[in-house]
Amino acid sequence: MAASQGDYKDRQFLAVIGDEDSVTGLLLAGIGHVTSPPDSQKNFLVVDSKTETSAIEAAFESFTTQRKDIGIVLINQHVGLPPLLYFTASILPRNTWLQIADKIRYRIDTYTAAFPTILEIPSKEHPYDPEKDSVLRRVRRLFGE
Amino acid sequence: MSGAGDREAVFPTRQSLGIMKAKLKGAETGHSLLKRKSEALTKRFREITRRIDEAKRKMGRVMQIAAFSLAEVTYAVGGDIGYQVQESAKSARFRLRTKQENVSGVFLPAFESYLTEGNNDFGLTGLGKGGQQVQRCRETYARAVETLVELASLQTAFVILDEVIKVVNRRVNAIEHVIIPRTENTIKYINSELDELDREEFYRLKKVAGKKQRDTAAADAEMKAKKAAAVSGKLNQERVEPAADPAPADILATGEDDDVIF
Image (cartoon, helix red, strand yellow):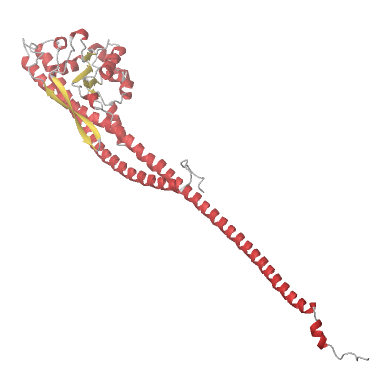
């Protein structure tokens, strides 16, 4: 079927793309892993307001398609903004906020593979928004809401 | 007529009629089986979607608590520990194990989290102050990640089931709306063709029989005529023959003889 034996047997790590606080917290929980020296790849990416979208996309690509040892990719729905920018952002319409998952939203929405699983997580400043979650939207649609 | 509708390209013979009937039967069995499978999967799917909905909301709460405990750490340590933590991460303590669950022939993977022993990357974090907060934060986040892992397995099951249900439903519909009508059409076509052949054959036989009858009648008539002719010929002969030499009879039959004068 969609997932064959070898497809997920070695997947034993989680990966994170998120703001500094979320990544720090998750690393404290002990999910951080750096592969052995020659090409030491981290399984986390810290995103701030200066991170290029292409960098996020590259990390997403590497976690989802290249690496075969990642079972779950956690990605922040929103990125916490630095305090100064935060004020500016709050008076702007919602959709212009700096949002990680939203930055590569099309990638997430078109991502349908079972492994690794993509999980959108809330960040510190922003409560969880069920309307934005790609899976939850599908759930909603199936319930005919 | 048989020409209407889609049908398979077969020769209308009794053998292919038998094959088509077997095929129709197989398609009907398969249809009912697939339908049942689809129903079982859909039931499971609904259960999973409901649980996902709950789990996502729970995750929202848990992550909020976790973020709060991290804020406590930042406050207690009196500075940002993010950089230190990121640099000291080496090997994952929190890992995943995958297992399978079988739902009517579909393997649904499920994640299970476990902690590896004796591997502590952040032994020195919060050594100066705030160690207790750091410890609590780690526990909170570990719980949060457990929730996330649970949610992830639900979500994986959701994605896989979604796909499988689509495939199964597509098959059910294909059988119901394409294969069965087509096979039925083919059977109808073969039947009508065979009937047509039967009628033709019957007509032909009738025609032949009629012709034969006519021929026999003609032959009979001829024979009869011949016979009649022969009989009448014989009669004629019989009638003619006595007339052929009537002399002996006539000798006496004639009246008086002329007188004989010497």
